[in-house]
Image (cartoon, rainbow, N blue to C red; front, side, top):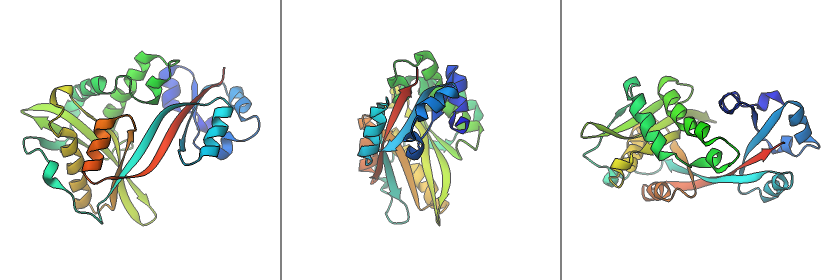
Amino acid sequence: MRTYISTIDSNRFGFNIAKVNDFEILQRENILEVFKIEEVKLIISRISTENINEINHLENIGFRIMDVQSTYRFEINKYKINLSFLNPDIIIRDAKDIDIMELTTISKESFEEYGHYFADNRLDKRLCRKIYDDWIHRSIIDNNIADKVLVAEIDGELAGFLSFKLFKKNNFKYAAGGIGAVSSKFRSKNVFSTLTLQGLIWGNSIGLDWEEHNVLNTNYPVNRVFSKLGFTIRNSYLTLHNWLD
């Protein structure tokens, strides 16, 4: 079971954290005791909201819901990209190493109390804040995390960012959004819409079949952006935590 231990989460919080999205593993008899033997203190699991029986089983063995996410998809090979929500005053370009410090500042203000880590009151909030800073940092310097990071500039200032990772599935090529945020100074200026549309334009230029993004159900502004740009919901998931002490 050590293969399920998340190195990055365990190192960040100082104790063993496992990520297990395989329900067959989690329904095994005495599975929690097995993880305890491996000195796992917290198990994190993500499961489709369609699987009610599986969710109920996880609740019965101590898991608690920490967030709900939807996956939005835009079929580039089927639909025309609606450019009417582009803000012509925004410059979109690829992120550079010199942007990292400013982007982490945007990340800090954007992701306070956001997501399943923050929702868990047993996790150190100071360490939760480092998750998103580290994510955008690694997205820029490590192609294993992101293949492309777009940044938005307004009057020479960074206004936001959005990352993408390329994947192949069967005979299809697609990109999944990673981390994205908009500076509080530049909200309500179609910054996120412009970043998302430029991501679609990029995806079309390299022959992608679709792009998709995950977003918390409670992040209403971003849900509205994806809806107005023609994305449709394809999946939804719950993230659950189970403490083993």
